[in-house]
Image 1 (cartoon, rainbow, N blue to C red):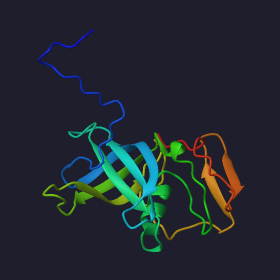
Image 2 (cartoon, rainbow, N blue to C red; image 1 turned 60 degrees about the vertical axis):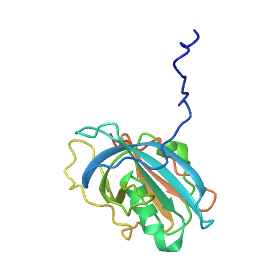
Image 3 (cartoon, rainbow, N blue to C red; image 1 turned 45 degrees about the vertical axis):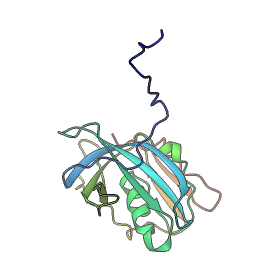
Image 4 (tube, rainbow, N blue to C red; image 1 turned 180 degrees about the vertical axis):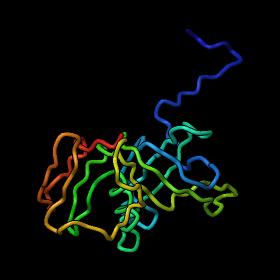
Amino acid sequence: MTPAPDTVVVDLTGYKDRNGARVPEGTYRVIVEDAEQSKAKTGNTMITVWLRIVGGDFDGDTIVDRLTMTEKSLFRVVGFLQAIGIKTPRSRLRVPLEALKGKTLDVDVVDGEPYMKRIKSEVTSYMRVLPQGSTEKAVEADPWETPEPEAVAVESSTEEVDAVVDADTEVDLDGIDLR
């Protein structure tokens, strides 16, 4: 069907908001909608994550966060991984970005510094969402609490899996049930 002459067709099929929404400061339940690896302006590797708010007044709004792979900012990457249920040994991990999608976590957000006269929400911390019925307290992911350096234990709804992690080991996120 041809659009009327006074209309235009805008194809947003592959569009991704690179800035994210501005929401009031606070804690929000989010789901990882997408994740991709890219390069920061400095040349450092980074992971961009799109976090869609689930529930509340801002249901459906997306917060964009960038996790840069530098020694100084690895605590944020570790906090994110722990919040989605990955224990972080002090060794190399290979994490498939596709497997991050659909994971649920809580985030604290604040207003960021204005960029081009626009203020966006920025993530200051990540918190793990515990399964319903869990007796554990939900706490902010602590990047310095780690298991033995040689192994990572990934909890599954049916069994606990221990895997030796080295530079060539992938972490299986499909077995982690956080919903």
